[in-house]
Amino acid sequence: MPLPLSQRLGDDSIASFSRAAVQRWKDAEVLRRAGRRLAAIYLLGYSTEMLLKAAYFRSLGFASDRVISPSDREQARGEYGKLGLVQKPGQHDLTGWAQLLVAKRYDLGTPHASGVDRQIVNQAQTIYDHWLETIRSHSTRVYRQEFESVRDAVLWFHRNDRIL
Amino acid sequence: MSTVREKWILARDHSSFVQRLYAALSAGASKGQPLVFENRIGTSGALNVTVLWQAWSELGHQARSDIIVEAYRKMGVERLAIALGLTFEEAVSSGLLPYSIVPLVRESDPVSPDSIRAALLQEGAIETSSGLFLRFADSGRAQESYRRLIQSVPGPYWSIVQELPRE
Image (tube, rainbow over all chains, first blue to last red; front, side):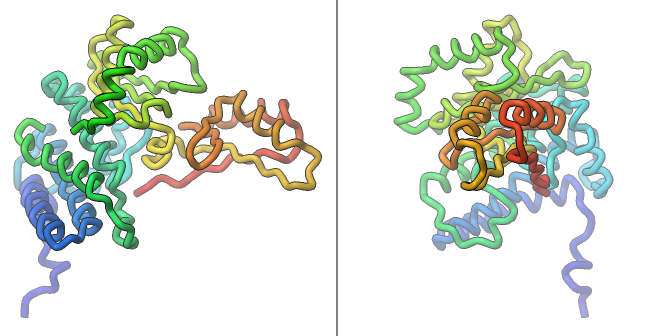
């Protein structure tokens, strides 16, 4: 008898975040083709969150399989003041994590290419305009144009994952 | 991806937006619109800038960002790592303005709605699609504004509300 799923998930790491980001993208595509745009956006938001968090801890030099603990994430969010963010990002605050990533790279002396830095934050905000973790408890209709703006932005993150 | 309408607005108004933001930055206004949050990133010398402005609601985030960058260039600032443009509704949704001052007025109260409205506008309240609101990023500024409102329209008509952050 295998262990229950909750006990088989394993630890968070850059590798697990990266794999999950791709899988959630594929899951979202299945839902999109089935006309389930709200559920697709729900997964697309998490796909982006995983890419941003993987990139953040990669910038700190974490090995791909090193465990990313809740205290690692809390420590990252706790740097918001030093890094010039107006407020402490929430756990799933896509724009906040994008800002942490960009600002941390500046702070470490390894900034993104000029323009890419701002684009990371702007693309994250484009998604965050439409995405909330509380989407799961709603059945609101999603218009095609707003879905496509989210999908385009998430696709940008996947296509540019190597330079994040 | 810019829509046709956004491209049209940008072509028509881009330099006007830049000029208006540049004027606001030069004036250093701390309330009203556009409202600017400017913070330094560590010891890097680069800036993290967020600008709240209702006027650019029909523009996408990249277009707004380009306007911020250009206005700062006119100020002689080149190192903008983050240039985020939001409307007030977007800022509230993102949890950026958790403190609000809410008028608590009943019909029987001896105060006119017009005087409440005028006092809110004087403090920099913003007209949005969901009505007039006065919001702040931190409690200090909210309390300063609250004290001025009490002086402007005395009575138990004002309340500071803090929204819990999104997790």
